[in-house]
Amino acid sequence: MKLSKLALFSLMLWLATLSVFAWFFVRGNTEAGNDQRTAVVLHPEERALILTEMRALLAATQGVVDGVAHNDMAAVARSARSAGMGAAADVNPALMAKLPLAFKSQGMGVHHSMDDLAAAAESGKSSSELLGMLGGTLSSCVACHAAWQLSTAEHAQ
Image 1 (cartoon, rainbow, N blue to C red):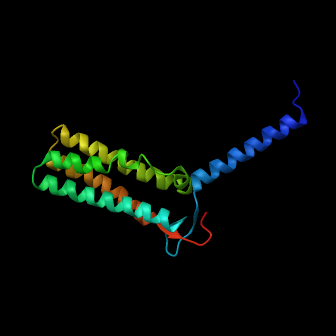
Image 2 (tube, helix red, strand yellow):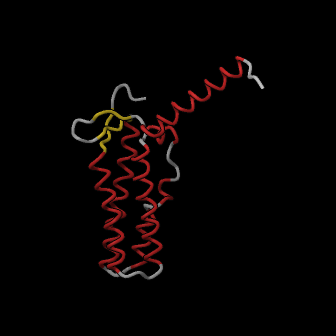
């Protein structure tokens, strides 16, 4: 069966559009940073939103450590869950499109691990097990901060 020229052109245009979208989804809106990290270029409001989320993750981590120190597993679970996937549910899709796939994967991994930590606290895991889990989560935070920086630019779209 032969495709008409219009159908073939439409198919090629669709494939080209899909390819560009896939490339942008993986790469995000990035450029070389001013150090060894990759800069994710965002509008100032988008950058502020991500930094606010990171500060919430840090506050939740402090709550987990404090809960473990006081053997208060309900506080551990509450603090960890506050930074779980529920905290990432309302992210703007346009912002998510600007973030590189590796950045998104690391971020979602941290949110998932906080939910896992909350479930572990609720199931009666020991303090040392909980701190071990938190240590693994923090290694993801360190790796992310070592690889990425958030920048703003006049040309950010």
